[in-house]
Image (cartoon, rainbow, N blue to C red; front, side):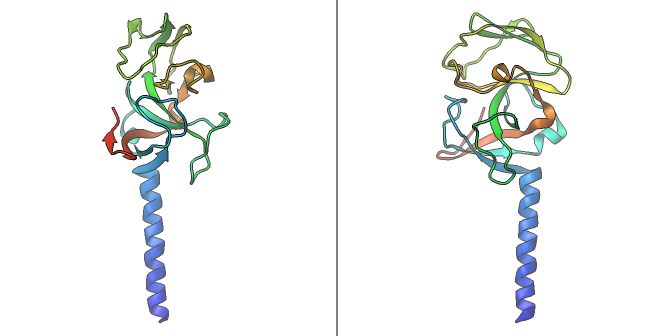
Length: 178
């Protein structure tokens, strides 16, 4: 009897360890909280996030990412870490210059093609150059006040704060995020 209990205990402990390793180094699940990424992502959708990709390479322009911003208030923390995670789209990379003029985002003085947005920006942003180790992110919902992103932080996001790339919407409908 004791041998059987010990066998079950070892199996359960191993399963927990493997689950934590997979969650921290391979993929994790997050729930969209809010409308900042509409129409791409909807409030309440469950996302599968690849935690491994950015261990091999840095984010690319257009990637939809999960990152932490501890000083942001009013957002739910991740169920396991308690840290506040946000989902946004990468707009500019280290060395890029980003600006917003007349509702259009410009990266390196070229207008960004953004077929994933429904509403142009209402504000202008003077040109800023993204430093090494940082990226500039925006929510896809560009209505005033709809997204906590690099505009509202008044700063880019540190690459060290990026948790992973959103790969799939798991619930309520299965689909790849582009």
